[in-house]
Image (cartoon, rainbow, N blue to C red; front, side, top):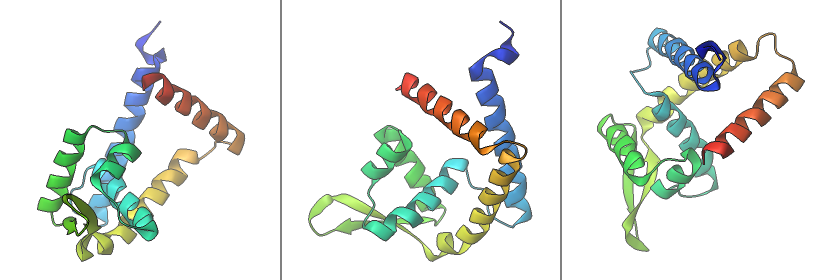
Length: 145
């Protein structure tokens, strides 16, 4: 089998192209250098905080990452002024995650870039093809768990 036919190769190539495209869009929209994970975490926190407090363990589960990985990502986001980790009265060990005003302000530009990228990705693809692709991706993710 040629490497171009390997699923891992294709997934990696698509990931690289999306990253490059998002980096270019973010740069032109004067969005500071953010990793894709940071962008998705901001988006996640905006959505999930509508339903109540969000904690690191919620991110670990949603993004399927280990505690050490989540800790590193959140420490960097805190250093960049994107989030605050605030203590909660009922458990001194837990910290709820709160976006800073700065992160909320750049979210609209981030959302526009994500929506534009999504339109680009979907161009020329039918809804049925997207459903099949999504189902295949879900199977691949389950295989990797």
